[in-house]
Image 1: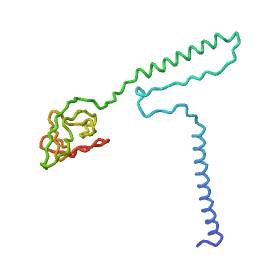
Image 2 (image 1 turned 180 degrees about the vertical axis):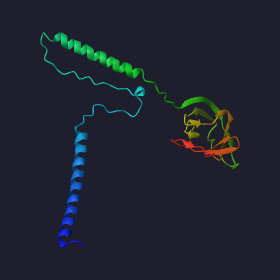
Image 3 (image 1 turned 30 degrees about the vertical axis):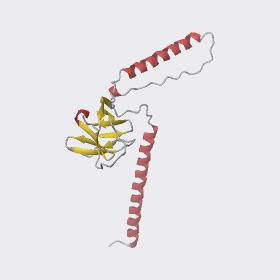
Image 4 (image 1 turned 30 degrees about the horizontal axis):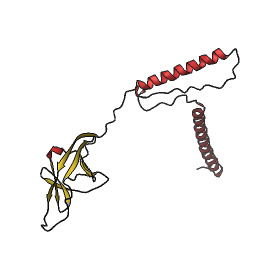
Length: 193
């Protein structure tokens, strides 16, 4: 069995051992931090491959007081700066060009609108006699329309296969076996078929 003095000795030894481990861990942690903060980072690397990234070198020309003996030196520096700038733009011009697809107008025709009235006593004027219809193609394959006072703009629909009718002052688009009521709007409306 251990004496009272030996128990205290073991307790102090254990506490001293733990304090030593903690001090060593703190020293190691701060030595790593100091090592990383002293290192100089010269380049920041891009995520994209190098052949697709244009690097632009910055040219700084300091203002100098011109003395007769240094005039030739400044002119050479300016010429070098202009040449370096030309090289930068040449690098940018050699990058692959990206093609941005946009909406394209496919066709435009004037379509006669068939007017059907369910009320024989209706004396209101006809809503449309003809309507300008534009067929557009969208790179996202959007299918929809926008109806204004002057035109019907269709996306994703072949205008040679449509018929326009009005029934009781409402305009309908007939395509294949579907009948869609068209409403005036400043926004495009998606077809629900």
